[in-house]
Image (tube, rainbow, N blue to C red; front, side, top):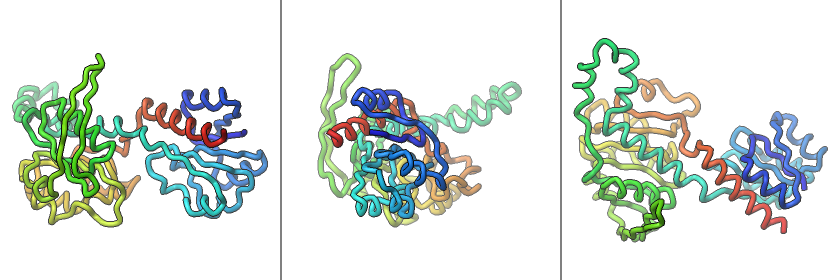
Length: 316
């Protein structure tokens, strides 16, 4: 079977597919040429990221395609209804993202609590002339140990964040309307493990008692956290969104920061990607990253392995 990967594919997955007897073609194809290429070469499977959108018009004209492997966390670039109508199977890597997004959330948390986002900006500019002044300015950070982390959404990613926070000495609370309690198993490098049992809190309790709130929910049509919810948080607290842009009202967030109703915020996702507004980019109380939650080589290897195993099982 011929399988086309339009946006690259990890060697881990490529080897699995080749060893199973399939041909893997790694080739970037322009959108206006994609349909002709697939049909002319009798491509039966395609592996895509968001940079290769598969619209209804494209999918409806495909004659040989049997499956689509989605290499991205979101499936917005694939018309799932059109694929279903054409009886084209769509595979997702559901488990590959958890650790990388969780680690980025903790990285933003540490950056904000220890003023690293600020010192990393100022040291290259003034470190040689005003070292001692910068030292005094950035010496008022806070440690994570003993602080409370509130997690909104307690699926795979939320639970991974919880494990890392507990390992750093934090108390963890969570709110998830679909999860009442959860048992976390923290496994270490030497195969020792510790179990923690957590029970859900109400959203109001979580917001009012947490030192930091981190969002890890499925995509929503409307804001989950807006001005009303932000006002329930402590003015010394911060909020992190590495989930989806609609989870958090960015305008309300900036207003809360400017009015000193919140201490800091961190964003990896934005409503207006790839051109976030200047009010976000220039706000000194925000730690920012360009939607890189799952952008590690480890994640790409896990995506490729998971998708390849799905595909091999499907074809067998």
